[in-house]
Length: 271
Image 1: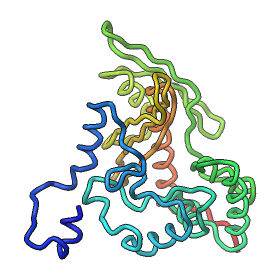
Image 2: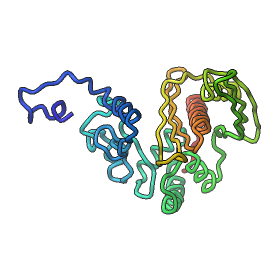
Image 3: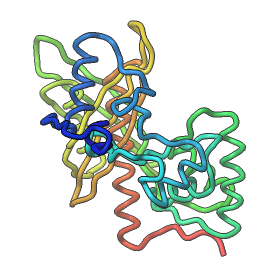
Image 4: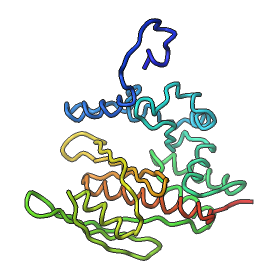
């Protein structure tokens, strides 16, 4: 990447490496060798393009190249990742709400941001559920609700067809569905699709270990596409099937919010 980005410093040197495959190959090597890639590893690390500092977030939201000299897509990564935490600023907070389809401005934004900073002092990472709760609590407004995973039951093995039964809820109403698949995760995703009624194509699925050991937390990120809209969802659990289910439900919830926003049912809060 130094040769590609700073070619002026390496005259006469070229390479035919397909740099967009770097991150994927790095994950493959890590999986085969059992040595995980450090989160802060340059170029291919999970946090290589993540920003929590308020000044960094404001900079990349205004102009990506401010703090990202490398185009994340050029190495197979996702750029301009905003991680909400105690160091985040108002710009990143408002941007995250906008992406969720929640439009807060004026005094409403000030109130919600103050509450966010209080929560961020006690919690390492703020999730979308936390943001929704903050807005609802501080401003007393009903938001577009997403789905929650209430129950999950799976069966599989070397004999028989993998099956999954899920129960999801939204706005107090519960829906149950069962499905069979090529594996327990596939069956679970199909069951969630049936229970929610949200049709989407799975275009990305990534599993990583948060901690070491046999009881390590599994961190799953899924990417869905529906009618040209791409979203992602994340789930964490010691059970990788449960983590996958939570990630899929989170992605479906984001699709629901975006659809509501596109149908001009935006949440407008503040003077």
